[in-house]
Length: 111
Image (cartoon, rainbow, N blue to C red; front, top):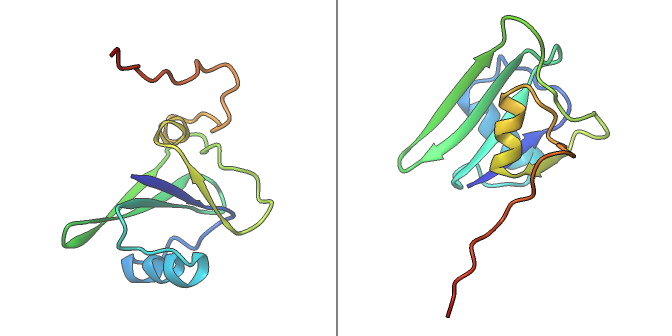
């Protein structure tokens, strides 16, 4: 699965159809792809995640009672592709640029 962040802030009053239209028309991506599209409000304390699975959309909503998400800086309103690992960091309240994280190690096949 791919994870795409809608940089900048998004009006989270949008429903599934509004967010899917934003993905298609604003970012030129396919909302029916097996990807996660993540949107954040201006105060950085709420997220909506749009995800297509088999025959319907999932719409996840996360509201923080204290604190804010470490959302990327608003250099533009373009979409930003991140890894699932970076997505987990974001949901855990960490910046997606973890300089001290251990690098990913892939297992090698011995022949």
